[in-house]
Length: 393
Image (cartoon, rainbow, N blue to C red; front, side, top):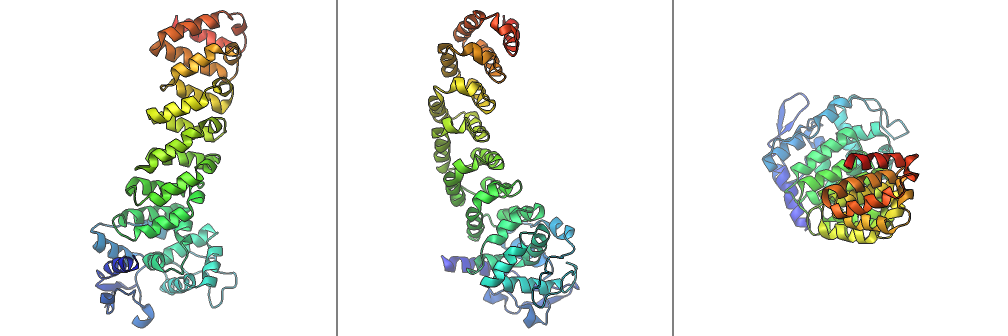
């Protein structure tokens, strides 16, 4: 496995024919055939341009024209974060300055030591620092990815940033067929929960699901199943998991849907968990929906009178659960209470409309039972139900 990645890295490096200099001149790359990253100190301090080298390499290696988020580099011009006592380091230099390449070397060297890596991770907690650090190390991201002493936090922190996440998403596309993509997936799966709870970070996970095959994404799919029940109880996590459910492919898909379906009675009553139950119902998977409807039996009346639960019940009406729900409402002595409830009245309105279109016999039984309590429904939210009754006659 190690030799495979080494070969892949060498293949990435071999296409270089020259170094891009800051003054747009060129210098031959003497050690390229060895598959070793050039040492700028051995080349009189001359190094790659900001972003050209890695992009050119990937263009040659993949045959694609690569645009790795140049807007990130254009929008980040100054760095003020390294002013907390780092030895031998002077803050506030322009990214366009020739000195910035020396900072890239300094950051790379720091990243490969335990203490230096910890210091960088502290600095990365600040978005300004993160943008600048990421822009400096981007040309060397492959080197960092294969260095076993370097943690994967850099991909995680870049994924949380507007421009950084765009660059990581494009990197995923470029490395789609390369063995190096496993390093990116490993970094993302290690921080899966945090990324899914982040309003920007979860889009990087979605990019993997949209671009890569199910086998490559398997570490992410496994993490989704492990952390699903925790994520769906978090506001952003629930939204992210709903998106994950609609995108996941391969054998893990049914496993994840089955996990949600088995826990649907609990999730349907949760303020955020109910959204992922609605999402699964909307997929119209007969086996999963049947399991959900069976698990919710005995809870339909209770769910109808809660804000979150009423949405789930209405989705059951719009799917194959219409018969189950209406029959439970007809058997209950609380039908009128549901019809007069601030949330339940919407459930009864939907039941009347959908049964009219699809189950006329059930519709007739529901109308008869409601009309027996005509006077009770003339007040409060019950008037909404009477209005629908009249419109359907």
